[in-house]
Image (cartoon, rainbow, N blue to C red):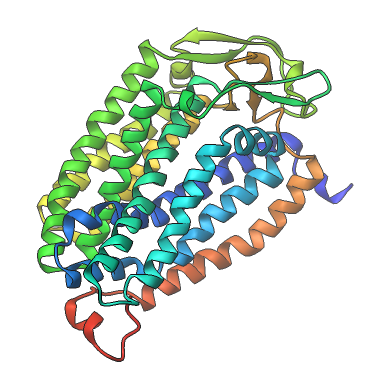
Length: 384
């Protein structure tokens, strides 16, 4: 037996779909509170000392949290090449805006305290706000467009044609999803600030986080309602082999109102995902008002897990539907790398992913504790 045949092709494809979800959720629950803190910076901190406290709650861990974003992009590139080709080229301007915003963050961290000028520091503080706000919004906008279908098609020779534009991405449903993403990560950032800071910063974070948690519940409900009555979903109308070749043109696909909800009818256990989204946000609100710091962060993570899982389970087996030519839509069963490639990648992942988890946990353990004024004004500290 050839070694890679120890796991069949169908199972490997499913495993890599799950792993992609794990990486996206890992980034949202770690890098997500970094983005949320940046978004909250102008609102929870009113003095330079308070702003430094806010920034330094994520100053020691934000770089490590970016690992999950890089791993997610790498997984898409290696495991789902057509998905990488379409999304990274079709969403080029949106990706550029995200990268520009993310680049502002390390520059802001490093440069804001290089001068004592109030205007200098204020400018970099607004750069840090942009670095949190823009990605939080655009990530959700991208998901909203994926749910509606992306305007691309494959020619018979598998060349990709994308016929969309940046401003077309800013449609009402996508913006609704963008606001949900923004509220979700703002809630998560507030949960982190409540845990890692004290005094006025923590109190303001608790207030804004409570509002964000309620907004998550409302926006998540609205998103689901519009997905049911106002957004056409996709359904495969022909036979498709889970072990077939990676050629999306070998199937036929139809658009149907409410099709994104059919998985919940066929597999009732999937309803746990949206339930976790609602319950997690509600419990985060309750824990925030009850001043249960650790529980607030855990419930916020639970809400993120539920919301992202809801999107993945609703779309399965689709990973990038096409509004221009539905049969060009990419699915788990026809958009992956080869059997051997997925197996080799899985072996590498099984070895290194636990190491990354262990190292990340160790870093958080070592750097545990609150950030206060004393810790950042100490001349021997390395605070930003």
